[in-house]
Image 1 (spheres, rainbow, N blue to C red):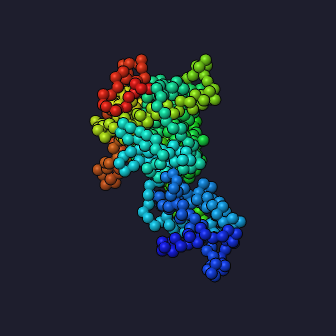
Image 2 (image 1 turned 180 degrees about the vertical axis):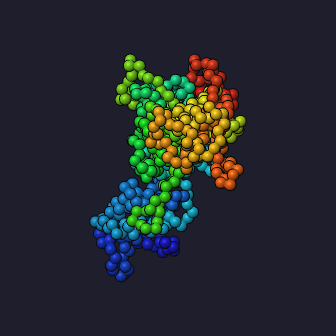
Image 3 (image 1 turned 45 degrees about the horizontal axis):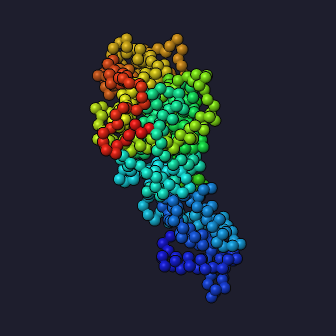
Length: 538
């Protein structure tokens, strides 16, 4: 671990001048009777000549090539340094193959070397520099990346931040400025102009690594192209050979998926169990899973992440209240039979348009970065950071994505409340009473299920009823019902009370102004600032 550098250099010199053909184990050599270094020692020397070793902030050791791209390579695994060192050893010492024991010993030493310095950030697909620039990993073997700064972006040969790769990643084409890039992308989708503008804003914001992103939810009946739309959106933000995923079976399976992709889509979601709803909410704002390390009793591994998510669904009523507040609903229209195209045709056109679409999205992101520091909102909705980005997008482009998003969020919350039978019954009670005060047990007794039969998810006791009302509070607030559970009864029992009050819904979220002009996708007049984003170029 703390070998003197001069001694290490001497060892490296001995390795570089050693005659091939010897065995990998120890023993006496013939050069002056010096003991030949072991295979593990030579593996460590080979590794230190070619890599530096770092520890990520989530306590994972990585190797970074000294004369290569700024990529963090895991020490173990199929794509790790262990495999590369095994091959390098065989090439360097002709006729020798490092044993599994020697490789294991070498990995232990290299992991120790990684702990010598302070942990460093290791990013997946998207990162940021200390001065606020956004870096997007193109995913190619040469390690090139796109660096985005206010009103400017460029492709660089070496990333200024450290990236890791995974088998769930695919290369991203180099962006190329071409007129009409977003128009070409819109022509592939089956959505109106306001929905498309929301999608564009969501994709540009998806490269901002330090904010929560709402879950892009493609809604529509069968035959509207939901899955293909979500797949294309994900493959623009974070290309993957498996952009669409099935619903995970448990939280650990989901965590493994989320750890390997910056953006991913859950396809054809019909019902969302409570654990998955909670997990998706935490993945939006940032989550971590601690698990026991393999073959150990006291060591742990941490999977920490904040992700960009999309999903496709037919019924928005399947969303729980807290999840409904974290979605961006995009509704797709039914495709006319005369306009339907095959997936192969769509894929071909999409691949041809991708470089131009990427350039247009990066131009929009560069414009957003220029104005975002000065954006202030009169009121802060639940996804406040994303709302600020939408306000910046509107300032740059002249669109109305923020008011449309607030109105759509209110509608999603209302739909989710209608899909919750207990929540609908509580809302009906308050509508009739105006204000209702009582204990959770009294509420459960007074609220009756529809048709007289209790559904399976109906609260079974007062404790569950109290927790359910607290979960429903955001949805109830969206329809003008406030929930207060801070008061106590005045008798000696001091029972906890629930106060439900009918108020007026937030007018700003209830409706949004319609667009006066639907003739063009872009505003007629570009922003006057020099060097700012120019939507008329596309």
